[in-house]
Image (cartoon, rainbow, N blue to C red; front, top):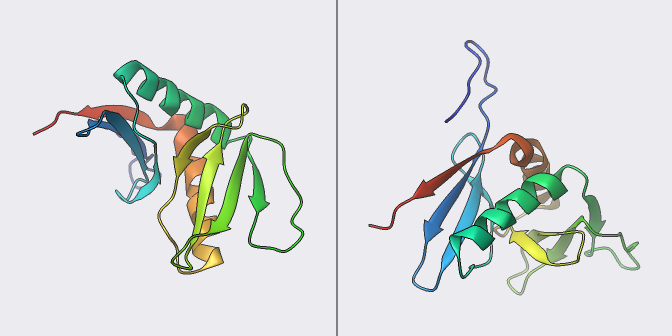
Length: 136
C-alpha cells in the first residue's frame, strides 16, 4: 500500500518480491517505479523476505565505500560499495553487517547518479511496503 500525503510528493518506495525460473528475488523500487536495488535469487520466499528486512535495517546505517578511488578507505559493514563494472559503468552493492551482498544497483553513467541511487535506497528502504507479484 502506497502512502501519499495529499498535495505533497512524499510517496514511499516498495519492495516487489517475484518468482524467477531459478527461485525468488526482490527489487526495491523508488516511488517513481524505478528499480534502485535488486537482490540475489533466493531458494525460498522466507529467505527472500529476510533479505528485504536486512536491506530495510542496514541501508539507513550503512557507510559508503568508494572503491573507484585509489587508496580508498575501507569501511566496516554494513556498507554501500561503489565500484566500476566491466562495461565501465558505476554501480553499488549493499553489504550486510556480516559482509553478505544483499542487493546491487544497475549501472550508472556518472558517479552523481550512482550516489543519488544510494540516497534513494537509504530514503526508501526503511519504510517501503512489501508486495508479492504472482508469476504469470
